[in-house]
Amino acid sequence: VHTNLSLVDLYDLAKIVHDTDTEHVKMATIPATPVTIDSIDYLEPKVVEMERMIAQMIRGIDLLTPSEITVAVFNGNGARMVATRTAEYLRARDFNVDKVANAETFGYDTTYIIALSDMAKAQILRATLPQPDQATIVSPDELSEHYNALLPYTPNGTDLLLIAGKGFDVNE
Image (spheres, rainbow, N blue to C red):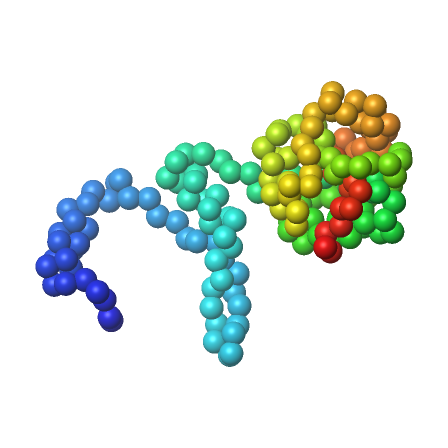
């Protein structure tokens, strides 16, 4: 074993560990996926799940993960297959996509995320997009005419509507 700790540092560390009350020690296994690289088996940490676990253990807070977010994706710019490509992009990042369709118009100049539930979910979705600054988060009231037109096509339990506006594409 190689270390940059001096013998004094090692002694001090051992003393701290020895004097620690184990009732105040929290332990957990880091979530990981088994992978093989060059015929050697490793455990690759699942970063999002690990951050969530640490936040829960140390700070006592629950972090949202994409797997807890349900999105309906609508093509609002008329580009061929943009809603389908966007849905595939989001599913690959563990989002639940419950609807893929054209919007009521292809005249959207801006990409919108309509937050039907928690604004934090909208922020997570926005941060996941390849160009997050192109998406504007709004409430249903702020985009009521369009929201009301899409509402009949929105499944119950949907958290967010993502409407791909002019120039939006996950492949860019």
